[in-house]
Length: 213
Picture 1: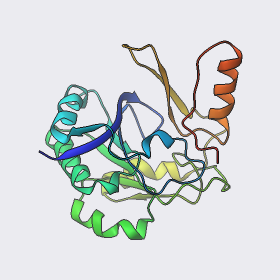
Picture 2: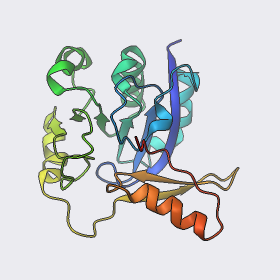
Picture 3: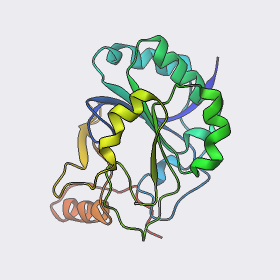
């Protein structure tokens, strides 16, 4: 069985691609962009599972979801697991696929050629904390959204437009077992730190996974 280091799975999410989506976050990232909002996904050797077990979790959501978004961490640091997950998703009849990577698009071309149409669009390049943030789905405007299939062109070309003022940027999700709340999406610079401070001031327990170096 193919091993996979997994951070988390959420469904539904609406801020990381069109429609209601399944979100899968890989665990482990050596890129570690300064200011990353997902610092909890950097460490390696955590969340070990298998692709088969993840697909078992995803299966009930496939018929309800419009697509799959894979992020991290850095998915391409687990290339075999990524390929197996995407093949399994399509075998289940899943919809379009968007993958996030902090690597340059040019460096990803060999891996993408092996995946043969399993990814409809990719958002590539490292997050740059001091760059503008005006484009949809991206943490910084240097990041490139590249459609890789005809379906990707159809679904994701609209996201090349500037992010409308006041557009929904975050989903709020709850863990039924622990009562914890999670925010999923692309926060604006400083949003997570400000939110954590406001919650603490109101007497709530709050933490942020944002790198504040």
